[in-house]
Image (cartoon, rainbow, N blue to C red; front, side, top):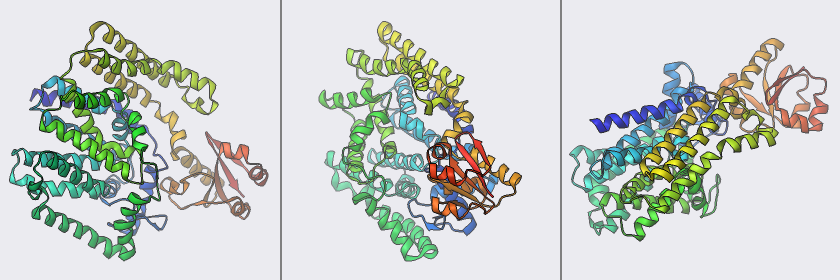
Length: 521
C-alpha cells in the first residue's frame, strides 16, 4: 500500500507539472486541429466507423480515439483541451501503474520510484502525455497485452487473462493501427524462441486468441463496409497498412532514422539508457526473464519500426516504458562509477546552459522574440539551478538516485512555471486566437465567408469559425476582391509577397499577432 501511495503522489506531481499546458495550450494545426475537424464532420454525418476530412475519405486512423473525442464533445458541448489531453495523460498514468506492478517483485521501492521518474521525464513520453494523439492510448494497450502475456508465461495468470490478452491486442490496433498487433506478436514470439519454448506459441496465439481477434476485427470491418463500402475498407486494410510499411506516401525516411532520433527522444537519459543496455549485454548482467523480455521488446520493436517505410520519432513511444524500466532494473546492479557520473553530468550541463541559451537565442533571432517572457526566463533559470545542484550532488555525494530525482523534479518545476505562459505562446502554435479575432471582425464588418492564403492546414480553422474555410491561390484571390469576405494571411507572407500587397493595397486590414485579417470589399 505504501508503494502504491508513493507512486500515486508522483503521478499527482507529474499532473500538476503539466496542468498549465493541459489547460491553456492551443491545438496544433498539423494533427490536433485536423482531428477535431474530422470528429466534427463525423458527428454531422452520423458516421461511426468511417471518417472524412473536408469531404475527402480519411482512413488513416482507426475509430476508437475519435469515438472518445466524439463522446467528449457530445457530453461537454464542445472541444476542450483539458478533456482531450486526458485521453493521452490517463493512458500514460495507467502505463506507469502497470509497469510498477510488473517489476515490484524484482526490486525495492527505491528502484521502482526511479523507474517511474525515468519514464515520466523522457522527452518523448512527457511530450506525448498531454497531446491529442492516439500513440499513448495504443501504447497503454500494448503494455497491458504484453504484461498479460508475461503473466500467462510465468504461471501467474487467471482464466480471465487468456481472454483479456487478445482483447488488449485488438484495442491496441483499434486505437492506432497495425503496430498494436505486430509489436506484441513479434516480441512474444522472439522471446519464446529465445527461451526455446516456441512450441508453446499456441498457448498465447492459439485458437481462442485467433477466434476473439477474428470476431472483433470482423465486427469492425463489417461496420466499415456498411458505412464506406469496398473502397474505404480497402484503403483502411491495405493502403494504410501495407502502403505505409513498404513504400510510404507519408513520413518516408531511411532505415537509420530511429538510430538518430532515439538519442533526442529519450533526453535527458540518452547516455544512461543506451549505456546500461550495452553494458548489461557486455557484462552479462541481464539475468531474469523480465529483463530479457523487456530487452527483446525494445530491440525487436526498434528493428521492426526501422524496416517500415513510414517513420516519425513519436512512433517510438511504445518502446519507452520498457526502455526506462529495463534501465532501472540494470541500474540497481551498479555502484557509483565514473561512467554513470558522466551519463548524469551531461544532462546536468545541458540544464545549466538553459538560461544562457534562451537569452542568446531570443536576443539574436527576431522570429523567436515571442519567447522573451518573464515566465520562460524563470523556467530556464530553474533548469539552470537544477543543473548546478545536480553537478554538486554528482561531485560531492556521488548518489545516483538523488541526482536523478533532482533532475526530474527540476524539470517538472520548469514545465509548471513555463506552462503558465502558454496563452502568450499560443498564437505561435495554433489558430484559436486569430480565428476569434476573425469572427469578431466578420461581425463588425458584416462579411460572409473566410479565405486563407499560403497557410498550411488552414482548412481545419472550421473548428473555430463554424464554417468551411477556403484555401485560395493568388489567381482565386483576384476574383474575390469585392466579395464581402475575409482573407487571413500570415504577416511574413504579406510583408514579402509584392503581388499580394499590390492586390489588396486599398483593402482594410487588421493585425492579429502573426496574421493579417483583410476585408475583401
